[in-house]
Amino acid sequence: MHELSVAQMAQGLAAGAFSSLELTQHFLRRIEAHNGHLNAYISVCAEQALASARRADAAIAAGQQGPLTGVPLAHKDIFCTAGVRTTCGSRMLAEFVPPYDATVVARLQAAGAVVLGKTNMDEFAMGSSNETSYFSAVRNPWDTDCVPGGSSGGSAAAVAARLAPIATATDTGGSIRQPAALCGVTGLKPTYGRVSRWGMIAFASSMDQGGPIGQSAEDCALLLQAMAGHDPKDSTSIVEPVPDYCGQFGGPLDGLKIGVVEEYFADLGDAVAARVRGALAELEKLGTRLVSVRLPRSHLAVPAYYVLAPAEASANLARFDGVRYGYRCAEPVDLLDLYCRTRAEGFGAEVKRRILVGTYVLSAGFYDAYFRKAQQVRRLIKEDFAAAFAQVDILAGPSCPAGAFRFGSKTADPVAMYLQDIYTIAANLAGLPALSLPCGAVAGKPIGLQLIGNYFAEARILGAAHRLQQATDWHRAVPAAEGWR
Ligand code: GLN
Image (cartoon, protein in one colour):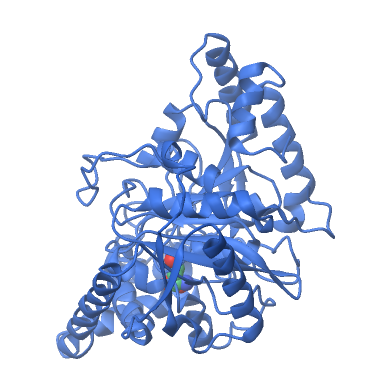
């Protein structure tokens, strides 16, 4: 059953081939068998899942089935779930049980999806390897000595090992696309504002965006359909109507112009470049036209992001002070001691580093030199994209510089870790939708092809990815050795 696509699951449920209860029990058994080793889930919600599966079965029997009714899924542990602990991968929120659901969670519940549990992640979504999680790192199902990527490593690994058919995730600088690439699955970061951020714990609010991870572009489209839409509770959520993503599938790609970003290949290793170019050649066979384009300010994306994201994080994380919710240090002697020890004990090293950097670049003496400058660079990067999209329909390149790396190999050098997102961050700075899909492997480690679309062009990049997946098998490759499937 875990081999099925989401559409096939819905068909099976409608035809009575299996019930949602059976499907849910099957995934819970897989989690029971493999999560101890993979650590993809922080919390498993077995009882709630079985109860919602029963409700879904009743809805299906009453003829009230939607595309996700009775389909199990996992939520990244950054989305608040009423009555279910939501940790954000941090000691600060290790015991936090929200009294409300994030909009994304509520929408998926209304769509009849069954929540299996909450997936592991880098602390407050800061990281590219899952090694900053307070709940220990996730293992990559393709090579369990390697990281799954981050910050949505739990969601990507859960889908790769079929411990969930689909999962929600978030992407501030690459946290959907990079783990999707490293785990050999498909992930989409939507246009900024397409998916509500309400109830999604904030990291860098001007870039944070929720999106789907799945086995295919089609599964991602089905999940995005239910996640997306205007939310009056999120002031940056966009009023634009949500198109029928899957309804636009199947259109020919003839004449579609794909811009191959030159800068993204300049320092790329030959083997990775060959995989990415191999996938582009397949897209060409499907009728698209490849042209070379330039994003001249690409090299400024990582430095600008590592000023802006920490600045926003330092403001967002000020709320964790031991007073209102979350961790509180033992026996504070006064208010200052409460603040200082709560934050010293509750946050991990990477989060502290970001708060320090962010506070520094926002401080009176350095604001103009760093924060304002980075905002100006952000505008230039956005202009580069606008110029490129005047010539082409989609931009393409690698998702990441290489495949999954070994635990510990980048932890001593934060900059080496930050460079994981060298190809993904620019889309966040500009607010553009971007997707990663598998395009083969190097030394047994999956490699991701990235497709970047213009604003609200989710249907276009999903459609191109879907056609490519119909014509190729890369997304069907499974991690062979471990018997996860
Ligand atoms: N790896 C990047 C960071 O550490 C991006 C994380 C994200 O997208 N949430 O900030």
